Amino acid sequence: MILVGATMAVALPAFKAIGQQRKDIDQRYLVVTAVGNLAERIRAESSGKDLSQERLNNYQSALIGELDLNDPQAELSVVNTDDGEVSGVRQVAIKVSWRNIYGENVDPVTLTLWLYE
View (spheres, rainbow, N blue to C red):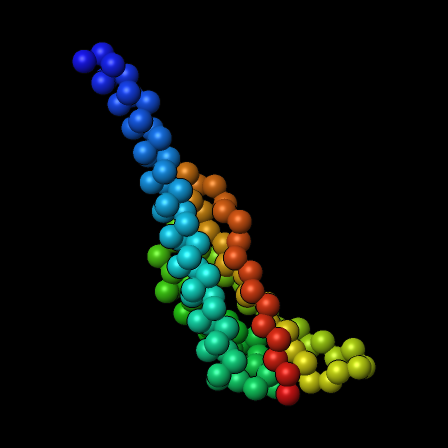
């Protein structure tokens, strides 16, 4: 009986840690999927020329509302990258961060979308 009790005392915290890691992985998968879907939506709905920061703010609000996370933060920004060689190229940066159940910031998910005319 003592052996079984000692084994359970060691095993239960390990199972709890494994469960937390699984939840963290599930949250990251949810965010990666949502960000990928948002990138596809942005690409389908805009050509790059008509993409404004106001429109990105609307996408940002929708993304935050879609995510069931602890304190989700999303940043969407658009950058014109006319460098003389290639014109009409715009870059959209999407970054999502959140906190885990312990209140710690997790590594953010970032995606860069390039729009060519």
